[in-house]
Length: 287
Image 1 (spheres, rainbow, N blue to C red):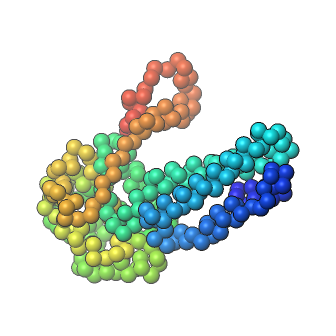
Image 2: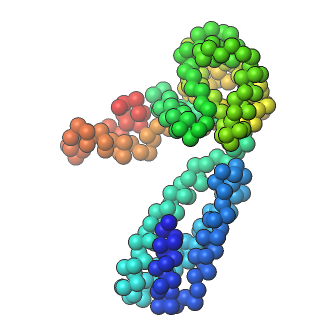
Image 3: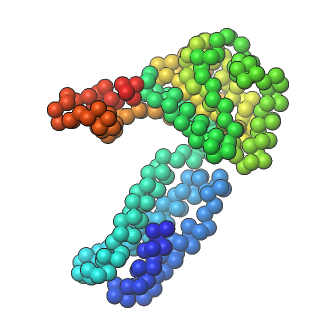
């Protein structure tokens, strides 16, 4: 841990730097030791805010140390401390990015609708996360909307796809209990609600589908839909009746130049003489 490395080096030179103790380091270390990453409460907004404030306070002290290293010309001390400080700065940046991305409300209301333009990467996003969740021990069901070809109730169609013969209630209870025993979640993922017959039947069934699942705390749902089909598949004002949370997937928006780099490297193309493809690379389907 870089904070521990920093602590050892700092304690060795603290008197040279004008510090009587290392209390600011001990404070953050004790705080981090108390964190239980398996506890859902940790991911609530209030807990993440406390973590952010604690880290910000620690980083303010670290910035003070760095100032002393450069302004007071302590070269020998600087050489020993600067690497741990740089690592801490990188970790702090990554942690802040993570905190900004986490949606704490999904911990207790795990119902997500991902929407975006055609080819923007929604299917890849869901498939990658389905694989990750499965590797972490969660029970995961990934369904493709293109396989829902009738106007029967979605549960009937989903069960036909996995050849499940039991009732909706027994299925949900069984996989809720399994998730509870493993301290994991059962995740039902349906990609592309707008494909096949879904564009016609989801509007009639979606609220009932969610309300059936809502009774089971350990079952999460993630859905995707093409942006221009949202009004076709979602019941009007569904958020007023059910805590469904929307997330727009933007593909490579604002990252198109970075997205081009592996493309140029693979085909050995000199980017300086190649015409700009930023607009094309906004959408990952380009690749």
